[in-house]
Amino acid sequence: MERKVDAPSNIFCRRGRLAAWYFAACAGSRSPRKDALTIAVGGKHRLNYLPLTLAERLGHFRQEGLELTIADHPVDATAVAALASGGADMVSAAYEYTIELHARGQNVQCVAVQGRYAGLALGLSSELAGNYKTPKDLKGLRIGVTAPGASSHLFVNVLLAKAGPRPEAVSLVAVGSGAAVTAMQKRSIDAIANPDPVINLLEMGGAITTVADTRTAEGQRYVFGSDYPAGVIVASEDFIRAHPRTTQALANGAVRALRWIPKIRRSKLSPRCRPIITARRKRPMASRCAKSWRDTRRTDTCRWRRRTLSVAC
Image 1 (cartoon, rainbow, N blue to C red):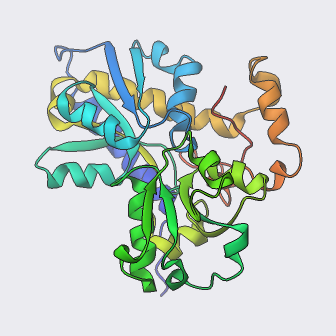
Image 2: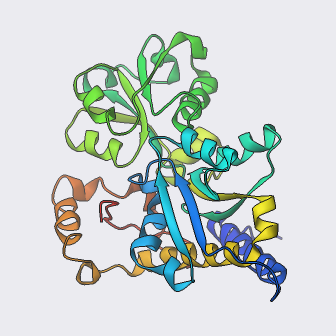
């Protein structure tokens, strides 16, 4: 008899509900609540963290009684450092930082998952892409990553480990996100590992050809071998135990943003958002945008659907 296996996103939904029940059970009437909350984020403009931006702009956190301050950092590493040093109550960063912080002896827990896919892609310059067959062909190239030790750095290392050269055989260049497009266009680097919107912009201009892509289910399985969530919201276990009602309110706000995404209509957007969305629907962007939501057409509330969204709203 064939055994039915749950879809990965359904597993994420189920785990999310269990976490919500856990926080609700812990949130006694006498438990303290911290309404003024600071979240550090490693690049608010990145599509990986779109639900956080939407929940803020749509007022979901205010409706949950939270006064939220989002501290925008250039990269995940500095945002995570803010959490570790006590400069932030929570952090919105790549999932692997939860593992890294545990390895450092810091007990943290993911309280909200913001996307199904890792959302990273590797693009080669148009002049070199024709010669690429396997990760072995990356040898000797200058590859731009957001920062040393960042999720994009890990992504490149995983690719090299699949059948490519040793990490020392490539030159990694920290280009961040803001200057990444210029660095690639000026050919200061030969390849780039970054999330959207950087990759989309370079694809639109014909500056790169994508050779490895975790914005799709197939690409993610090729690189990581299994499901690998994108941006997550993380808090220390001490904070969760001390402020369970605050943690629950934060999770509620994030989930409400996730549920809003499949229902988006241009008429519901504020006037300053409409030109951005309209521009993103014009060719060639219409066929390239929002790859992070490809193949997520089911109506599960925790699953993202393909939409042309912009974090500039």
